[in-house]
Image 1 (spheres, rainbow over the protein chains, first blue to last red):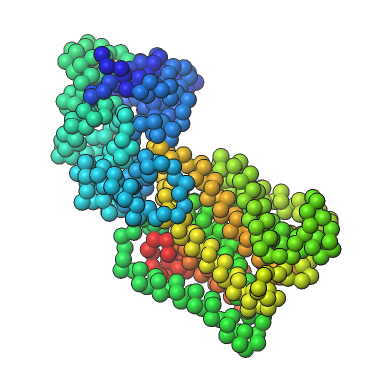
Image 2 (cartoon, one colour; image 1 turned 30 degrees about the vertical axis):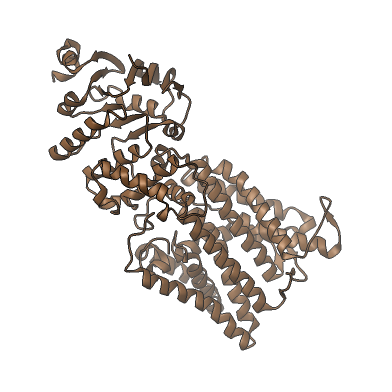
Length: 247
Length: 338
């Protein structure tokens, strides 16, 4: 078995009396989509926040390509190759789609303490940023302010922002949320080709997309991983049916 | 701090650029020509008034970098303006009586004074910013105010440099090859430095650093997710901002031949904020437009009524309600970083 690109080991997080993350371990291997599913309140967002670096776990470790990143902040993890998208789009609305993606290209191209050269003509930033937008089929909207983009297009910009980092692993938090069937289908297609370059940890409510895309699934309920396996195994697991799929 | 129309990293709007350039050029021409005319008419008072506008505008350019471009609402920029002023005053004081300060002689050379003022304000802002930028929102406003008040009370309680009475500069500090005593020459020096400060701001905001600072203001999470830590970016901008305001302060003390704790007071921090908001937050020419309106109102209306601030309040109200991008936005339209 290939070494895990992203590994979460024995993660614990408690908020007062609430054990939001209870001994969670999971891995993400090269070339796969690993879906994390669970009912509302299962602790998915808390887990994502810990993996992304905005929340510090009480115990456990997180490894990215063998580096222990447990104590690193969000930006340091991004520099080490963790790309992510947010459940609710987090973009700078007055800026163009390109402007949003270029910030990622900028971190990739070195430090940001360059005070003189104009970015508007900087081929080292424009090239990769345009390319990332092309890959999410949004090249024609590059110069449009994000404020004028549709919800679905914003989701695509978010994915482009993550891609431009040339990440080792992608963390996508409900990328299909709010997309129409057509947008959903296009994104599904994109993720299917993408996974061969970058493994994806996918949090998603759209079960059709999850079962179509995921090579493996982990089911989170009350902060614990209650089941783990491929789509077929998860579908048949009685605990999962009781907790989640049944209702 | 999302102001939905202040900028785009990649400019897209062209049609309004012509009008904007025209307005900006008009402002510069007005600022340059008025004192020239005044000089020809022998009205030194009006030359000095123009210098005052230019220096307050320069202090505003500094604040605008933090407040407008960086979204850091500093209510303590008087600290840098005043420290710049005190550098000029204290240096002249020691040069005048030949005494030493920390083993160093004073200097009445502006180039030396500017360098010291820039360094002093940069270091002070590094210390204040390093602490203040750990907070945000209202706490940031209050903590920058608190630091500025500390500097203010320090100055009022230090008798060797005049304490509350302030410190006179008997003879304006000098410059090589230029007669700084002559009002028009001094104006031109200040005007050139204002242009330099604006050019540096424009260049900075177009660079990678500027793109990161813009993103720090618009969406901190996006910046961090892109792999850039917002804190050092903000701190650097805060330091540069303070240095520009501090240089303006050093010149301001030389303009007036006097430096006092009033330059350090929170009133001045507030005035500077009013000027930046009045002119147009995050607009390159905003502080100049704001300073022109502010100083002219103060001079013209202030001569008629001591309640001129009431009218300033009305104007500010109008700007905040109807012209969110200030005088510049109103004159030149809402295009990026004008």
